[in-house]
Image 1: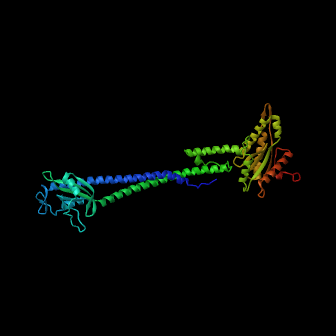
Image 2: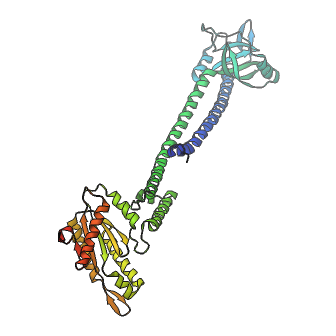
Image 3: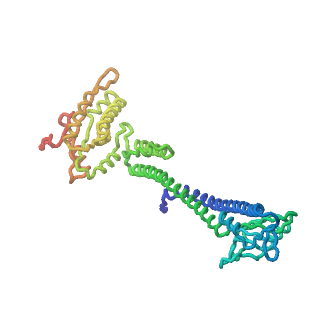
Length: 426
């Protein structure tokens, strides 16, 4: 059989859980970045429009009359504005935007300066702006205004005279670099939030996946023990206490274990371990320092079958088996060894086992069985040995079996150890 390369279940769960979140986060970040960009551009347009309109309003409040150029000087009505930049500089300081007054298509008053700090007066407005503002009398917004090689966002508002003719332009602009810096800052914030959400989702998914995988590993371990014939292995409570399909899987595995144990390891009549399962129990105790075992037999069992029938004999076997199982549930094991014989394993020394079996022997003998109008009871004989370090279990079982037959030949209804026999007769 070809062995497939193992893959981490946690990694698979994380991939299925976090990858869609990561993809969604990337898409949302990209979409958010574009939305932020469009939103900021819209806000910049509104802001620059307000500044350009307010600039006209401020000049109109301060000075009456129209803008015009005469003898290379700039006038507003009767007021000479040439080289008077106080109002424009105040607007720039308050808004952060550069402002300009064009008379005709020529820049006459401005906050824009070149590398030497000289005002950029005398330059012309672009043909495209001139066509829209002067030709159509409309306001104009551009995301790509070239000012001395630098890119600006700019808004242009027509300046009209008393005859409602366009005689100039009020301009407000912001450096594209400063806007992009703000955009990058906001985008970085979105990216950080997205990464935080992905990491948090990964952390939460990892916790859930870890618990899920832990439960799966527990079920796997249980099934592994089951495959090895260890039916005594318990399904961890943390699996059975879950409230999901894994708990159901655990319950099914336990149910399968019980069914397999009955089919493979249990004697159909007595429900005790069969020889195969008993051998597995012995193998588990191979290196156990203190272990005792016994072979037990129901005395005159053939006469029970002959006198009361096999159904009654089966009832006797089931009763003895039930009492053995109850007695040894936590301190050993019992198996049907054949017919009316039983193998008993005890996790303790021979003295403690003999004391335990003595109580058991008396309880069996006092139990009354009723068949029609007749009452009868049975007794049992035991051969008990302490397992020796230098021998295997087959040898120990042979010694116990020999002691059992010794007991049956010397009166039955007794517990026999090697200390109880006459060496000359054994």
